[in-house]
Image 1 (cartoon, rainbow, N blue to C red):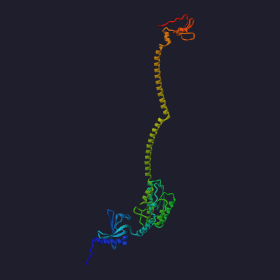
Image 2 (cartoon, helix red, strand yellow):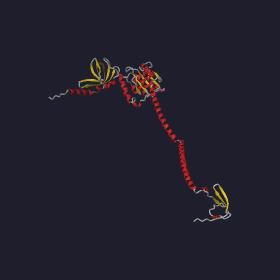
Image 3 (cartoon, one colour):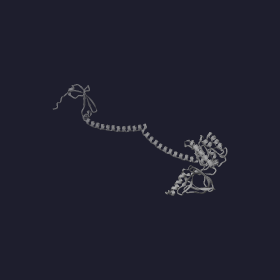
Image 4 (cartoon, rainbow, N blue to C red):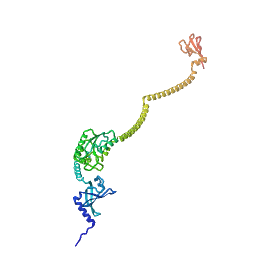
Length: 403
């Protein structure tokens, strides 16, 4: 007879496949008491769930820690949501936890998940509907209990960061009967006022304490609010439907105040730094402009008509001086030439001849007598010598021939 023999790994794989195909084991809630809880350095949490009838090994990997809102310890009664599967290497099965809640929160948590899925499918969590939180809010509305730690934290932080911001409180019920109606009314009333941003929140607590912020009416009031809303419900590990719908989620009321109230002193310091930078920039710009103006001023002075006239005047003066020099030179040249001509003309001058004993003779008609043929006996003649004239009467005319 032939027998089928399987390896251990094959058997474990077969059993694992059976677990995987079982729908109930893939999405199961298991209630029990925490035992042997260990937080590993890797971030994984190893523990056991037990009751009077048995024990099951459990593990929550570090990537699933977002589904844990409290620190686990021995003896806690909890409800674990996850998948039962086989660990092939050890041949054992265990519960792989995705979410862990304290016992008593299971029903509420299921309601929370159902409403969350419904509103998410409607698009109320979509980022395109989120309004930006104003950077410099002047009036901030707060919907919370008037005597709780939340409003005290918000007031203290607001006073420290910016004493000029005005807080408008709507004293709302945040827990128990009538809480959701009170929160909705507060949101709607502040939305009608001149408010820059609204903080909706309270301090931490159990899922029952925070349940008013998981109500659909509150979610819709936040979604349809025209003023930006910051949700600040519980501590950092608490998450409500209001957190998903709000325009911005703050892990605590204190953090909401930090986000809503801008730091006046830091802003003032930044303004001072910017002012100093701007003044330095303006000084440099003015210095550059001043140098440019001085350059243009120098250029304009050079191109000014008066400067041109002065240059032309100087040029004319230089030209006039040159002309005077040229004229003086020409005059000197002509004077020298004239002196030469004078020397040359001395020998031809009648006066020079007269000085040498010669005389100039004219007849009565003032004509020069150059020949005996021009006179007759008895004619009246005038003889001019160096120092005067002599009147003469011709007595005789004698012709002399030169051979």
